[in-house]
Image 1: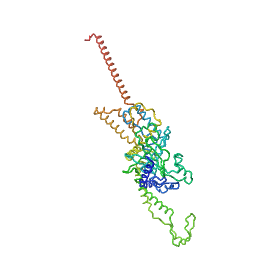
Image 2: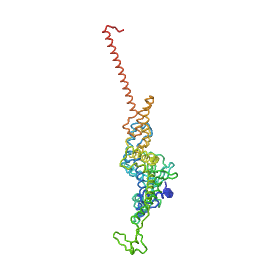
Image 3: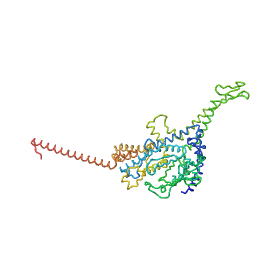
Image 4: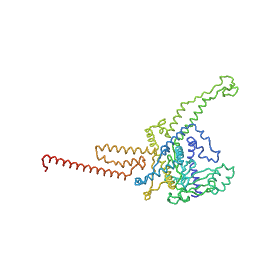
Length: 549
């Protein structure tokens, strides 16, 4: 993309987004106040940052509810304490091959450890908070080095800085990020050779040290066809290009770079028709949150009048100012001419309304359904019930998160580790196959979703065994080995503890041969015993003077 095109496209996106930004500013003010700034106000200096923005929040119900829902999603979908995904080949033959299956499981563990060693768990939690509050979040995955393996780096970007254009599938086509940097930051990022003379001159002036300049980063797909990204490629030839543009002068900063895959992922809680941006519980209950905040503020104001009531005095009853300090003295003409103002505020009505709005907000954030009881521990039944609730309530949301965020993130991580040589040698069977794989999620939420499948298999096996007592042909219908392999697959049992089909067939064949040999031996022994008994009978008859004809 040309520099002028990047600037023009960004300016168009910046103007289009003014309407949702007004809603986001209110969400940030009342539901996510820790962000500390306004969406539609450019913060060109330190003095324009609103550090006291959280003082406008008089009720924290929505803040706590948003964090509770975000933590529940984090624990159910990408639980940091256990492996929450598994890679599987799309070809059934590869999944049945021991060497291929062990290799893909080794790759899974390598990806898992790489994520655990990075800041993924910290950043993904912030992404869930943004997702719950604003309905949209953005996560960026960077490799610390494209030359040698040095780990991964994740960052959750404030959506005030993020703009993007969609492709025909609703995904990211062109990604833009807005920076507000001072001259010293620009010079530090791009160096002397990559910084325009105007910025270098201003970097030398102390009066310009706090002045911010808008810098636009654009990541865009290059039209160079499909490439093999498993091998090193020069930055200017990679599938995705990246440029930094100084918005004021439309000059390029630094050199053009490149990515092997799109490093930015946009997740949306729910998506409005015709809009690129999503909406979440924070968007839907914003009116209730603002009403509750006003009601609590009014109640506090009324309570202040009761705690420290104003005084009622006659027109000429005071000879001095009213001194309300401890031990203070006020001079009055008539003691009966001074009386406190008794407020008739209905705190019971206010408390009833406030409680109702708090319950409604908690319902919108699903807090009342996700927290089953107030206790330090839950039974296994309660845990299963909780995940069953989440499955029914958040199933569609989890599906969108997997498609928009987690699937491309794991695929990019796989490619980064493959280029970094972090996987074991590939088995020969994969040389003749494309080896495409799918991501199978095995976290707490995924296991809850698969529990129905496990129950159906067990129920069907039990029914066949029971009905087989009456109808023998039904007892031979189940394939025990196939059922065991399917249960192992659903329950995510490691391949190292499950025998392959060939091994099972060989063991069954060996047992059948041993059973046949045992039967033949028993028949031979029975024949020998019969001949022995016949010989003994003949001898007895001879001894008795009888002949055998």
